[in-house]
Length: 117
Image (cartoon, rainbow, N blue to C red; front, side, top):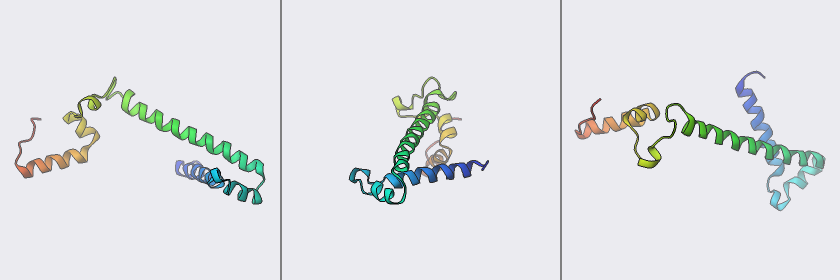
């Protein structure tokens, strides 16, 4: 299982399996049904694994967001878009190429002059 897709599918399967064993835990329905088939230790282990996987997924999303928004060399030390609400033409071309092309097409149709390049 050297390919990334295979590992991702395994992780997704384990996470989903743990989630299904713990579903509706507030009502204590599924864990008790699961314990009819598997020992309680496995249900408890599912709780631990599922919690750890959720924490890792949250940390991964946070780290990727932090890098892309704050530490990427293209925007470091900070993107000013959240302050001004605007992107430069270069940022728009790089980060939102399809939207930029659509905006330019609409401007051409309306006869609005395009910005100097």
